[in-house]
Length: 251
Image (cartoon, rainbow, N blue to C red; front, side, top):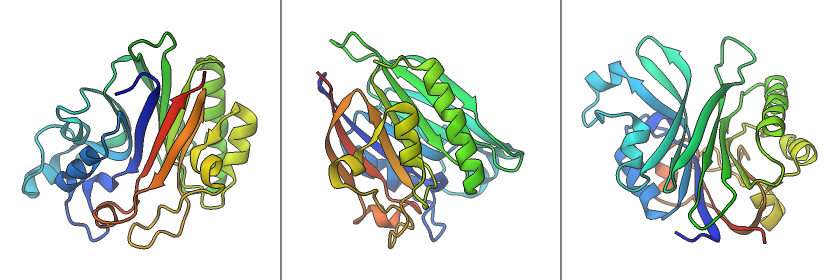
């Protein structure tokens, strides 16, 4: 770990199942460990699922985010969004740095699709200013997404100091690519792939990515690297492929 640079991964893990509905959580854990990242932003993480626990061999006893964090990311935050009779799922952030605070904010705009933004604050040794992290998974419907973007912008504007470093990552479901301009204007953030490669990354479906759904936005950093992890094993795990990024703190 470097006090001057953060390595991160953003990944919709599809509740630990591949496109073919094979349970691959152990493979996902091995894959994300290989990236050597400081932070992992996860979407569609199961906090509990009693029916799967009973029926699927090798189902972990602990939550999926605790299983994935293991002894590598010793700090984690979880935001429970969708709750049902057998359990619940939501977003999670795994971190090698301690959280000073964490909060899950309900940004659901209909009762049929429960969504939240998970806001964590970490303190990195030898750095005075805490880093704000937000993990998010927006709705499929365009009108609902744009309403959630307004809720997101309002939350950041009121809860994140403008000079504080900020990383906003997740599955934005923004195949129409409306979100970036809106967030740039509202929050003065940049998207790492647009900044380095002048285009968003294709991340869905994993076997042959065509849609640009996943994003990493930042403020208070300089982007160093951005990569879409679309080769094996990644294209045989979730229905999305993950985004990898390296950010240096702005001087």
